[in-house]
Length: 205
Image 1 (cartoon, rainbow, N blue to C red):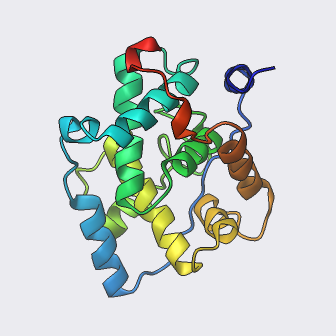
Image 2 (spheres, rainbow, N blue to C red):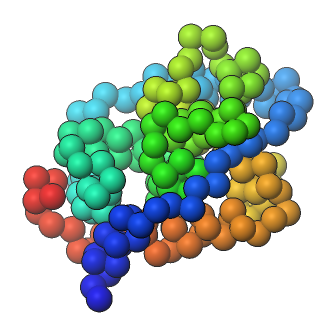
């Protein structure tokens, strides 16, 4: 079985979704300020993203892997461009963020967990009051990813780069192996990026 065939089959199978339940923890004033600034900044224009060759190559590859979930090419490319931008902006691997989305929500934009977490990255609403604005809609693609990436970056900083513990904090399951391992598996098996094997155009997919 080819690698791409394996990826397609894995994406067609039902996800074992582990929706987030981030726990409220008081933030130091300096941390709150940094996170507030992070979620309030504007995104770059899409055109500025796509003109960078390395971004275009990544978009082509990831688009081929996500087409079984998001069939519309424009919607898929908008989604992936936003993931790449928000992840990179937060100092995260975009493939890690795709893995978190897969495990947290199964790529369902309007997913709501039993605990009340919202959207692709399953962000808890208390974060709006903590670092954001009441105008922020956690079901909006960029807003959800901006919050999710900012929160995951915060947890990675707290845990000094320990992905296992940071992912546990993100999911509200610190100390348990199930969720981090699911994200690691998705990162390794589905969202690995090999820059040397891209097709010539996004339209090929």
